[in-house]
Length: 203
Image (cartoon, rainbow, N blue to C red; front, side, top):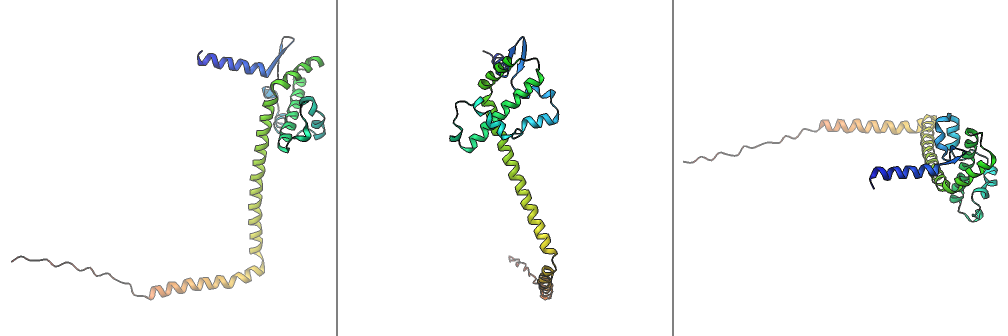
C-alpha cells in the first residue's frame, strides 16, 4: 500500500467520524468545520470553555456521560468532562442552526454518533484549552507582580522621607569615589625599565 493510498484511507475514516449522512445530506459533527460561517463572536464562544451556564452543563452530564459517577472524579477530570459536555451542547446548537431542516429524530441520530465518535476529541480539545488558559493566567499574574513591584518602588522613591534618608548616603558615595580618584592620581606611575641584554663579543 502506497503512502498516498494510506493517507487517503485515513482521510476518509476521519471524514466518516466527523460527519453523518441524513436524507442525502452531509451533516458535520466537527464544529470547527463550520468555521467559514462563523463571525468572531461565535468563534470565541465555541473555542473558550465556560461560555455556558454551569447549571446547564450539570443538567446534561448524564446525557453524554451516563456511565460516570461524577462525585468520584478528581477535580481536573471533572473540569475536562464538563468542558466536553459544553462542547457537545455548543456543537448541537451549531448543527441545528446551520441545518434547520433536521427533525428531532435526525438530531437524535446526530447526538448518538457524536457521543461515540467525538467524546475523546472534545476532551483533548478542552484539556488543551484549559492548559493554555492556566499558562495565560500565570503569565498575567507574573506581569502584574512585576508592575506592582515597580510601582511600589517608584512610590517609595518619591517619598520625602526616602529622599532625606538616601541623600546623605548618596553624597558619601560620591565623595568616596572622588576621593579615591584623587588619591590614585597623586601616586607616581611605576615605569618598567627594560634592560637590553649585553652583546657578547668574540675575540
